[in-house]
Image (cartoon, rainbow, N blue to C red; front, side, top):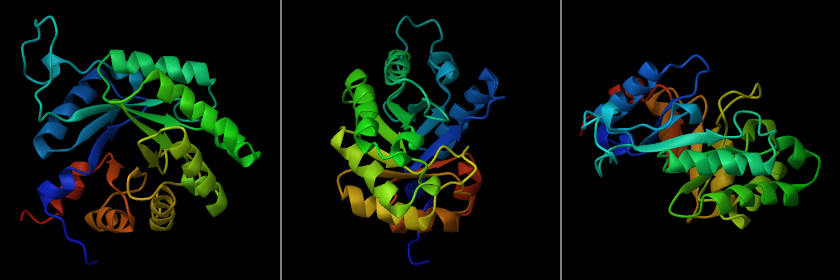
Length: 237
């Protein structure tokens, strides 16, 4: 392992994630506080956990238009989660509502069955519908379930994402039986999208060594629920 990021450096790669079906509002409050404590780039939560507002960050809960501090973790949510088997217009509405409720970033799931059936152009249309609903500066990440795809399908999914205007491609939901991120998939995704599109490795990143391997392979963001544990393994300086 040649790459050795410090704790503070690594934290800026992390989307501190809680997408468990039994998560409560109190759990999300704690997630955000923990993300702030460890210096994570963002939190990623289910859409019905929005908005994350002033009362959750120690600001004035009675403020009419609560705003997070500039250095506070960004807020990401998921759309079409976890199957991707949702109509494009519903994904678009879900994304638009999430942004209205404070999400800075949208992680949408494609219909991998559509891709496997040989219709990458329909996958591109699906992504484009969400992109149109949440234009920049909202960050759009596209979850392709790389572990369930062949290399050729990974390339097709990445190309469709770029053509539709996505900002990131992301390995997985963490809920698919095929598994999560792999170094090989991350490297292929990076090779396909080039240097200007983000690559998020998510699913199975549980140690500092895992994190370094993913970043070396080309990941520019890491989705993980064990961020505090991973950062404890990182050197302080």
